[in-house]
Image: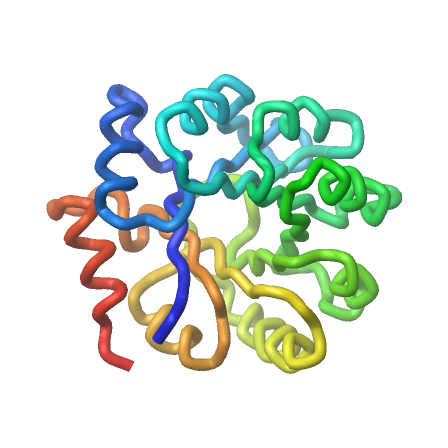
Length: 220
């Protein structure tokens, strides 16, 4: 089974971020997921331009930048300047008056455009945007905090998106409460990638490389 894994860096040990990035990189992670929160769109603050710059300087692997901010059109250029062509930027359509305009900024900068869909956001409200993005980040929890429980009603949304994927040039990624059970269930159905946080990767008693290897070797 071919699927990708990205590490949710808001869950990393910031006492030694350089070592965390190195261990994840050597352990076989595919990319680094950077959650940016402004305390307005979500009720939390997390990660910044400095965090992004630091991680970008420590690895050659892609960055996966998730902007949980109000009106990202006003600030996305700041992040794009710190990134490399081929990195991914997700915005929340709910946070923008005209999300397609912000998405085109991301495209023009040479990045991979994506949207993140909150649990309470319907698939029908974002169908048109699926024609101009390359990735869809499906939130299994309400955005803003780690260590939340999966919201079961999101399963129906995943089914709808998987059906739309057949006619769209998009990748579907899972974010939030991503356990081994969820990967075993949804990777065979067509989810392309998973954001690994405290449910599976961080806070374990095993090296990152061992955890990542075990996830890839799960039996389907």
